[in-house]
Amino acid sequence: MKKIEITFGPQGEVTLKTEGFAGKQCQEASRFLEQALGSVSEETLTGEYFQAQIKDRLEQKRE
Amino acid sequence: MSHITKIDIEVTDLTALKAACRRLGFTFVEGKNTYRWYGRLVGNAPLPEGLSIEDLGRCDHAIGVPGAEYEIGVRASMRGFRLLWDSYQRGGLEQKVGKGAGLLKQAYGIEKAKLEARRKGYSVYESRKTDGSITLRIQLGGGR
Image (cartoon, rainbow over all chains, first blue to last red; front, side, top):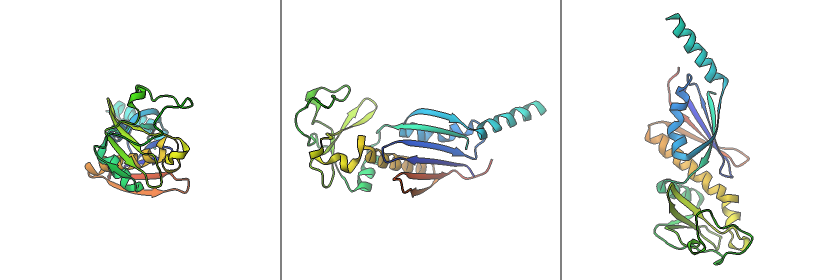
C-alpha cells in the first residue's frame, strides 16, 4: 500500500514521510503536498528508496 | 519509508485558512483591513521583514480569537499571505495560537493537505497524539 504520512506539530513544524513507493516514485507522489504546504527545508532518502534503486539497476542489467 | 522531508509552512490558500479558523473556533473576517494590536512599536520586538511601521495594524483580512483582545492580520504578500500579530501578553494571542502562531499554522497545514489530497481522490485519516501533534495518513492505494 502506498502511503504518505504527514505530522503537524503544535509549533507549526511539518514532517512528511512516504511508504511503499519504488525509488523516485515517492518524491513524485508527495511533490503536490510539499508544494502546496510551503517549502522543503530538509530531505532524507531512506533505505527503501535505495533498495528500489538497486533493484531497478539489476533489472536493467538483466534486460 | 522511502523519503522524509521537513516542510516550512507558507500560507497561500484562503479556503484552507478559513477552514483552519473554523477548526480552532476563530473568526475569519474577510476584507477587514485593520487588526487590533498594541498600537505602537516598542523596542523589544523587531519589525517584521519587509514591513514599515506604517504597515503594522493594516491587513487584507483579520482573524478574531475568542478570549484574546488582539487580532491576527492576514496580509497579502508576493508568495501568498503573511500572518501579522502582536505577541504582547496583554493581547492574549500567544496563549491561544502558540509561539509563532504555531497552532494556527498547524491547523492551516492540516486543512490544506486534506484539501489537496481529496482533490486527487485520496483517502485521508487523521489522528491526534498526546504531545499535541496531529498526523494525516493519506492512502494512494495499490502496491508496488
